[in-house]
Image 1 (cartoon, rainbow, N blue to C red):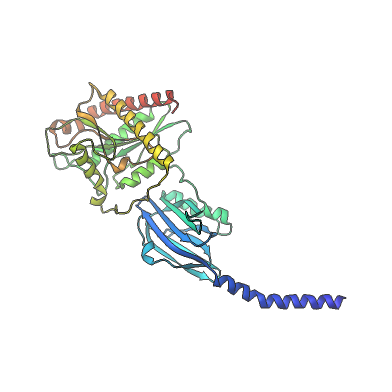
Image 2: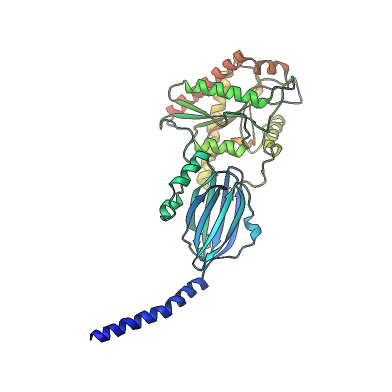
Length: 404
């Protein structure tokens, strides 16, 4: 009997040794098929979608020097044209292919530190396949360094590390957060005063710091700057910084020039698909072109989300933006000189956060001598910052009273 058991075991081992290569060959002969791909985004957020014939398992890791996102997959045949995954937005190089008979890899080389805030597999609409959806978002360098340090290459759950980017500004959970955005910066100087020296980017940053200090002095309010030095930020980066920090409000500050030098006064803009008037449309076009002037790629925007809940969120946010604009105008009335019809609207890209009430405030026009004098006057800037702070306080009170 013992001899029989030994013989049977030997036969099983022999059979396994014969079948094992066959099983491996069968697995390798039937890899996943990635039959389609698309990418869209900008220098703040980029989405990659890969269509596959069936549900894949995957893991995500990060490498530095250069910054790379590595997505490991089972054996996969890549059957889409390389042009469909041409690097855009956050990524400057994208490579993919077979690692061995059991695995494949996608390597995304980024232009700056990034993190996948979403990486998931979902069925496609036809129900015949699945999609791998990767949403990348810019990340502060210190947070990326921490991500590299904490990741594990042996545990898939840890390796994925997918989730929202941690706020760059710490605040109490109950705080009312205001993102103060100093328009322009770095290579994008904005308008120039009549002295030929003073630039809009300097005026907006000086005022932004003053306003943030005054807001931070208010109980229950915390303000942070999208930029605190002379640096270029794209319009999308400004919006993303506000959202990453869970801003309650977004206030973008500008001091433009106009061909009509007699036009003067503060103006409050909110977003709209259609400009309220020719002047608003011209100002929006000029501000929206700042990315192109700085050499940023603005041709590929993140894919729109066809979701009724997102549409409702945008509408509600727009209503709150209009409410904030009205509070600003009420606070300015009789105190700060304003343009005729001071609340205007147009399609400003910097106001496009779907869930953050936002306004763009023209402090005045550098093309007008009287406005220019005020913009350079420290006492007037103090007064303007006080009135704007009062407007934010009023907005906060009314929002809380209405259960917001």
